[in-house]
Amino acid sequence: MLVSKASAERCEGSSPSSATNQFKKYDMLLIAEILLTIFAWRKGWRWYALLPMAVCLAVGLLIGIGVGASGGDPSGASGLGIILDLIATGILIYMVSKGPKPKETTNI
Image (cartoon, rainbow, N blue to C red; front, side):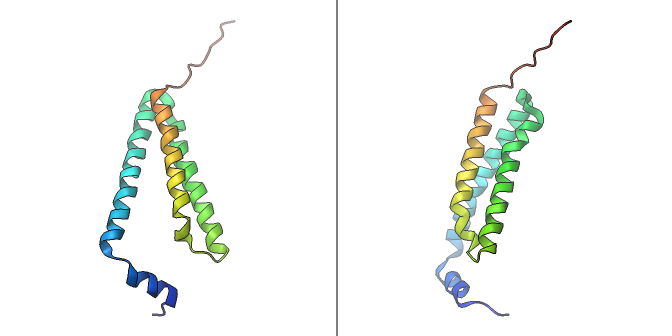
């Protein structure tokens, strides 16, 4: 199996415990987003509650593809992924705190 010199150097310097701690942080944010999505759904937002996570996923995927296609390291864009997750979490908190506006019906 061929391994590039740069990837071999990255693997030598990293420890499994630091990688585990990094995944724990992202897992907690993911769990919070899922719970907030459920609460927003029950609050009355229905399918709109899924939009923040879907948009975050789509933008992150496009950025990763763009960075990978330009020859960069896609893991270097993880900082932007955290920012996208925080924005989605903020939107979900807003959706949970404020219900959707009731539809106005006109009787003719």
